[in-house]
Length: 230
Ligand SMILES: N[C@@H](CCC(=O)N[C@@H](CS)C(=O)NCC(=O)O)C(=O)O
Image (tube, rainbow, N blue to C red; front, side, top):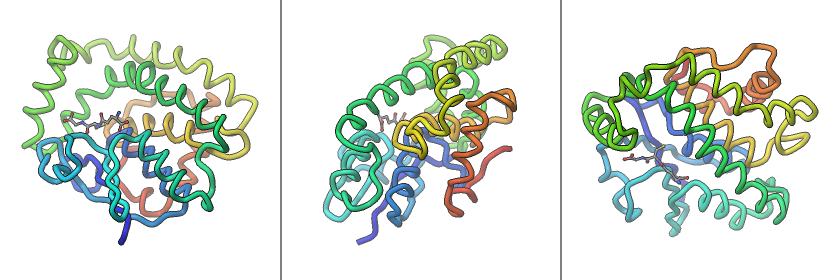
């Protein structure tokens, strides 16, 4: 049975914008596993109801249904040990947790201030009220107010990337000579931005920008064809 990855879609079926789904797309490609990607919108919870919760990514792999990107990555590593490793061993797996948590809190936390309005603009009409209502509750303010200081958010983003910049100045990937799951966790955030926003996030000579280009060049043709800017 083909592996199925349920991913968040914008108005167009082929604009896939969830950072958590992108990291799993990268992970499946890393493992050289073919999969069917199924589009699911915020208000199409019935599509993933079989998973017993309401968030994507969801992976259906034979009889296994796995939710949460970290659980999915661990499932892929455990189930397909003969394929290229996502973590490079148990120490690498433990260390990867830091990148997952840093990305979810620091990187996503800053990027969302640059992206929330663009995400709203790209959503299917039927998702817009849900997104505004749920996110305004989370942000504690209106979408417009939350996204009002883009210049400050951009400066903050470039600042919080400092440790990555220093690492990527001396090695091509966070995983060393080739990418590992931490690269995918962080790159998911840049794919999120790329799918909805035209704002240049990085200076062209920034080592993070050069790493981002290397990561983009590794995308499969199918993933590369999904809708994006730049
Ligand atoms: N910790 C989860 C987070 C998943 C998550 O937040 N997914 C978002 C899309 S990026 C979602 O499905 N949101 C549904 C909603 O807000 O209704 C993971 O790593 O997979």
